[in-house]
Length: 235
Length: 199
Image 1 (cartoon, each protein chain N blue to C red):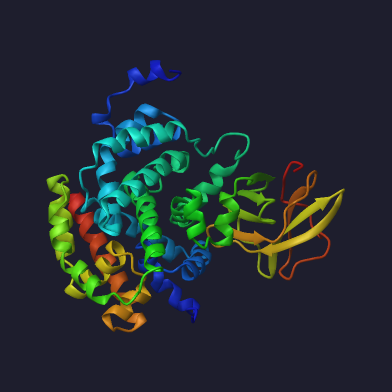
Image 2 (cartoon, chains in turn blue, red; image 1 turned 90 degrees about the vertical axis):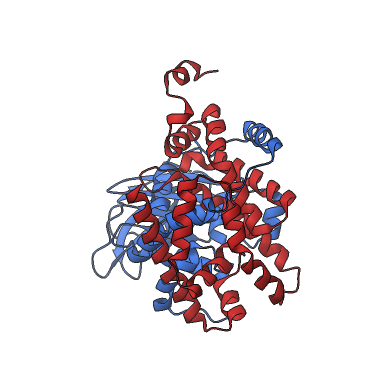
């Protein structure tokens, strides 16, 4: 199908809020969303409208449902935003909320039974975050939060930046995977006016490596030319 | 229970907002989850039922969505939005996923059935057993939309159609479907805000 031009994407905020995009367009819109404050505002402001459409059709529940839900919840582990594994995910999730719950929407719908997963084409990004073997590493240092979630089974990682000030003109951030003391260039990225960025990385940092971010010329560098602004503990 | 002593100190669920409850659920509070269930399950189930039509399937979807609310609750941030919106989003996406996977197995040219379903929407809405005030405000909100706006929002939200399908079903250009949905939501949003401001 024809993909919409970038200008057209702004018009999709309504359809996105109603879950009325197909998977491909939803992915595209979710890539656009972190970079577009006006779409973020639209999507956030439509949430209460769609909630009102939901409450309008409230129906008494079957009596047995309550106990089944409570029992299943008892057996279900919650995601952790404070624990070791996802120690730093709270800021990522804050980003998600700021981005009008973009990824959260997908998380909400995407994570579930095996059958559901088989039934759906998940976006690569969500697949990484929801992978059973997903791990997250927090990069600390300068302003803002940067974390990288990686999944060996997907062979890919997802960088989420929050509150990271936009790089100066003609400059970009670059992520490095430092293996045995040697920085390997990974991706360059920009943050939007609110300091957000979501970047997919087509590899997984090896055990013992360190992730670091430097500011580089916008085309990126083969070796770092500035001191890291953010760095992770060893993976 | 490890939280027992503190739990007894907090007010009962009757005076807790959904946001308070969901934040407590995010800390693993099972009693708060039971109280939250009582506040939101009818909406989650009703929405699933409206979208997928089949009561048994709706029950499965509601169960999955509500357990998902439990599982993802630590991610809820009350400064970013309302609990009901957060929960409705999870429930709707779950129901939509199911209905789309079923639709993809069926003949998609089921226009007559879609038209019939749309026609019955008014009855469904009025049959929803919900708090009168909310129902009144939503009914009035829906009625504040133009007929064409209401039609696209109903097809997209309650029938799980993509805006592309909506455009095909109604024989209107894609751009028209997009803007009609967006304009309708803006109107609905403003009407909801107004109704809340008045209540």
